[in-house]
Image 1: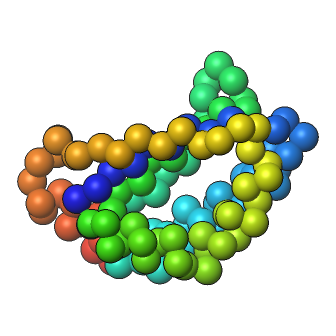
Image 2 (image 1 turned 90 degrees about the vertical axis):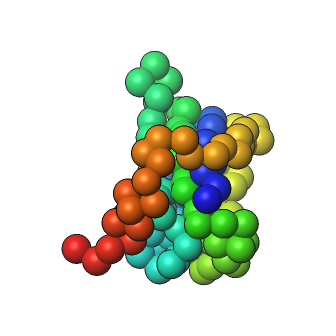
Length: 109
């Protein structure tokens, strides 16, 4: 399992375009990618131009599949909305530790 915590700063004038593109990517990731367990987008409470992505993938192959997906291309096309490079940190999920927790994230509702 691979988790990622990504921080981005957005150009204020480009915020709406950024939000439209990242919404396409986040929703498409969870909906269309079997290996994407979670893709959340959060906004910093102190700075409306700072956003965080919390992404969880089954494995490295799932991350590579994500980067090849059409919704990811929508996001990449809007990369010029960022004010500087993204700061990505790779993490190992610790808790919840039970595989069942992560498996239920992919169960249809």
